[in-house]
Length: 285
Image (cartoon, rainbow, N blue to C red; front, side, top):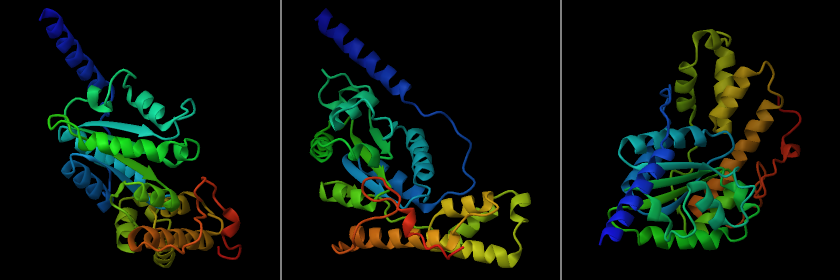
């Protein structure tokens, strides 16, 4: 009996240390909260189990919105484990990658054996491991089953964030549920974001220039385009790049939302992470 008690105390302490190790540090509040943040927060808080995928075009602010949602989930009482797909160099399988990154020993099964109460695991930049780990989809199906079977006292879910809409289609077809996609920014949203910038920055743009800037940013559907254009005195081939991003949004939305099968390959990036800069029209500046 004493041995069982000591084992229980040890397991409890290990789980508490585990939760503290993954705790997100406090950050300065965002000047503008895109609706994607609410969609991720509400979707993960309201779904105690499941494996989800979020896709957004390059530069769409996915990482910022997801991290802000994770901060809110943590404040709401969930353990949040935020990981990055770029940190996969030493893993040979998706199972090894996730367990090593989360810090779950191989002798603990299922993976939730080390979780402390309700838990959310997020893997940003999940495109990277998908390019080299062949067992990804099979492992995600196992995780979905584990999540669904998790005890009510320790429910958990998983969110995968990708930039390639082709990878998002693979994940959706593999059983992941789409969350907050597409999250294309509108001109009104970009205008509100622009208004949060320091006055010295905003005054650099005369009203006609500002209108053109926001028009191109809305065509790209991303705040990344807006910020890069503001920071650089000359953001080469701006109109052409905005058009390429617009095409990626339209392709991804049709493939994921409408289920279209004839969209051709992604190009910015493609499913292997290659950005096809040669597709950007040379004349659009």
